Length: 291
Image (cartoon, rainbow, N blue to C red; front, side):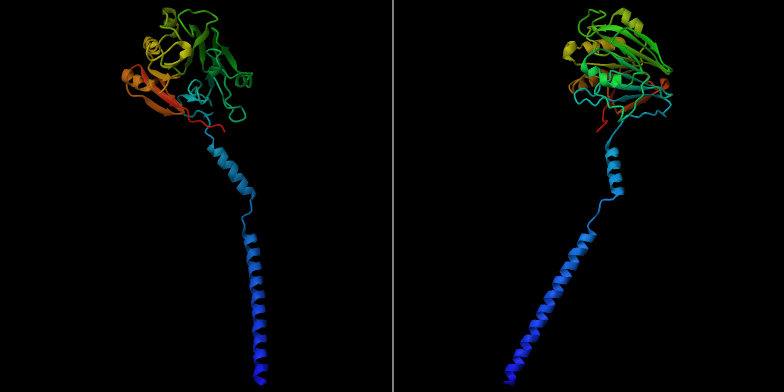
């Protein structure tokens, strides 16, 4: 009988111990869960600021200050199809003019504050009406013959033809000439002539930097008919910056004029830094990001 009582007592003790252990384990599990909840990261104001900063760092914007002491030329368009038509030209003193703006960054993203905006013709890949309208105080030339001055620039335009050799007021293309800090910079627009006229060459004078297209079906300009090469060789500038072209044009340009120098987003140049020879091809790539 004593053995039975002893056995019952032993079983009771074991059951109490088991329940106590189970309760303690549950309590410990609850405490662990509560601790994990406490330790979960909580978004702070600093985290939000860091996120905004990361987004801003991802943007690649044109430079609005020129501290180089030279003329600065930058690509600017956000166009995927035509990233090399639009350019910012900044004087050594920091005054800005823009030629052929298309799909431009908004004023809220970057305020370029141009003293003048020049459009060589009215096609969408050379015009951004919203951008032009956002700077009502800027002087403008819109594909007409004109002559203006800003603080640092003398800008004039020369009538030309977008396609063919007939030059008329309404023929939709002008050559834009920018004189700044001793340099003469020319944007040929989408000229489609087979050759420059004597009058045009006289008005252009000696050119240091020329933006020139080499392939454009709207101007009947191809690598086969070589209209672009003939025109640029007539003009004979120190530096050639291609606008409309395909990758097929690059080896042809190299074969004709030597190795192409590549710049990311901008070129800075002074009169005393110009190459001694003519027809040096400079490619300014467009790596800007506005969103």
